[in-house]
Image 1 (cartoon, one colour):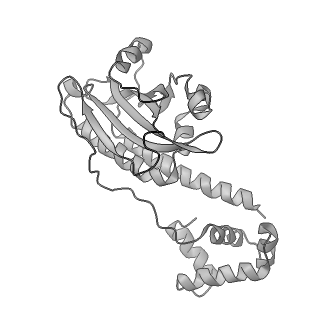
Image 2: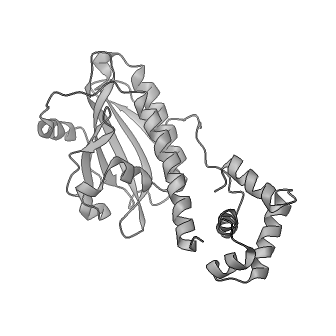
Length: 268
């Protein structure tokens, strides 16, 4: 039998895997093969920072698109999020984006990918992408980051291999609200502010409550109602009531049908 904390942890892990996989698929469409030559990225970073207006505490990093890795993560990340640079991998970053902001993040990245892929080679490094989202700090609280990024390396065919980015804490400026995307033109190129992005990715409606999900996962693991009740610290009558409610609102007759539909439609 699985504990309640294990059930919640597993469900969170599976949602993160789906989000991570989608983000990686978007980025892979804009990249080429791995690039082996060495670059003086310290010089590139300092030059690129001149194009950024710092509105709060920030840290920087380089996204190696061909290797799908984060490089040269700045030490100030510890003061802002509580993580050390070595902890902040790409998977770790994606796992800590606020669940409600993930569809916005994916829609923005997909829009930016399409925009950059359509640019001629001589303009790939003349734009700065800016969008915001919430991210979980090490203490469990969320803050809002402004991500600003620009291409710093590409191959001869236009495949993006590295981007430089900063994350700035803008919680004091935008404590709430819907994330927004802008693409800022540099060196005389046009800018696109608060872009209306096609909503390809959306938040899935929650068919089950958190408690119903806990109960259903334990039932799927082969536990009886009294065993589910013991694991969750509730009465058997409460478990049975939740089970009946799940069947009723989904117009199903048996727990087997409920489990089958939950698996097919990804409720858990």
